[in-house]
Length: 232
Image (tube, rainbow, N blue to C red; front, side, top):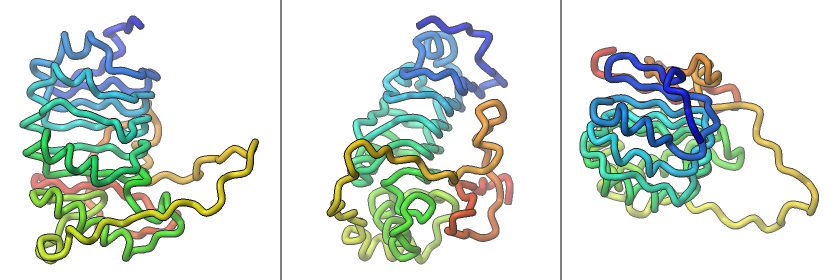
C-alpha cells in the first residue's frame, strides 16, 4: 500500500503518522526518517506488528496507542528507548511482554499499558480492584526494576522495595471464564477510555505527558499521564 509522505507530521526529530488505518509500519517511514527520528507516534492505526521499527535505531520515545497489537508483539532492539506507550491494544500476557521488553529496551523508564487486559485496571476490568492493580505494579517492577513511571503514576521507593522482595509472586492471574458468550451475541467495547481527552481523537492526538495529582480508578477516570523531570 502506497502512502503520501505529505501525511507525515514532522517536527524536528519528532515524527507522527496517526490515523491512517495501517496494519504494518510503511517502509518509507523507516527509509526516510528512521536514521534521525527520536520520537514516533503511530497511534490510531490498525497495527498488528511493529517489525517496521528495525530502521528506527535512534528511537527514544514510541507511542502506539489505539492499535491492534497482541501477545505476538515483537520489537527490534531499541537501546535508547526510554518511553513506551501501548495503551488500548490487545495485550493479555503481561509476563511475556515484560520479559521481551527487558530484553530489547534496556533503557526503558516510562511505560503505560492502560486499556489492555494485561493491565488489571478497573477501567477495562470491572471485576478488578485497587489491590489487583497494585499487585500488577509490583510484578511489572519486579520484571522492569528501572521504571520510573508506570501507567498513570510515578513509581515510589516503597513499590520498588516491595517489588524486589515479593514481586515475583505478584502476577495477577485471570481465571478462565466459566461461561462462554452465547453464539451470535457480539461483545461491545466499553464506552470509556483510559486515555486523556486529547489522545482520543487521531486528529489532535499528541501522546503528551501531564501532571496528575491523584489517580482515580472509577469508570470516569482519565489516567495515562506521565510526569517528566522537566515538568516538575
